[in-house]
Image (cartoon, rainbow, N blue to C red):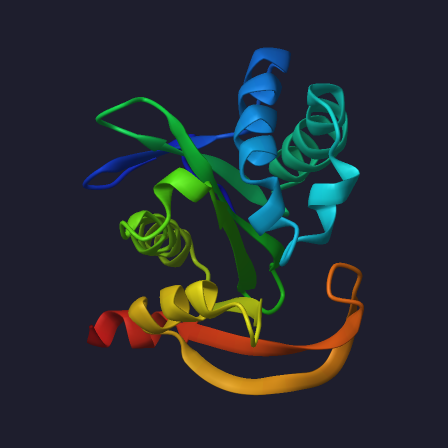
Amino acid sequence: MKLPEQIEAKRIILTGLNNPSFEIAKQIYAVVDKSRNRLREWLPWVDRTNSAEDEYTNFLVEWCKAHWEAEEGFAYLIISKETKQILGCVDIFNISQKNISGEIGYWLSDDAEGNGYMKEAVCALENESFNAGINRIVIKNDTKNLRSVHVTEQCGYVLEGVMRQDVWDEYHQRLRDTNIWAKLKSDKEKE
């Protein structure tokens, strides 16, 4: 499966992280660092990302570039058409050629929240993924992450179940419950 290096939506452009630079790492790190207090509640990698070097090595090179080349995952910056600013990231990963499925993950900066950007990003990425041959897309989120839950509902994903106490949450020092949402290509065709 291949996805385009750029996906255009109404107010945003998704720019592929297939050939990252250290300059991009610095920009992403600044966005993450500015939103760190909120993001760390839901994303365990935030506290392991303490510099632009961490962002570049751990995320951009070891994950984004490697997964893109192997066609196992495709990560994108979410960029505002109007301001040209990085708003966050969205990716499809855990791609299974056998099961023709993948999983979408995402995060958004504090400044961009509440404006519908993530719904737009998820819908744009799912469209490209379905067009590329994916049949099923999964989104997982903490049951208490109400903003993320809202995105999945707005995008028409179906709640298939809750994995109870499935992941240790360092931030909250508790076992967390995880929602499992999914959308099939046939669901999208009915919209």
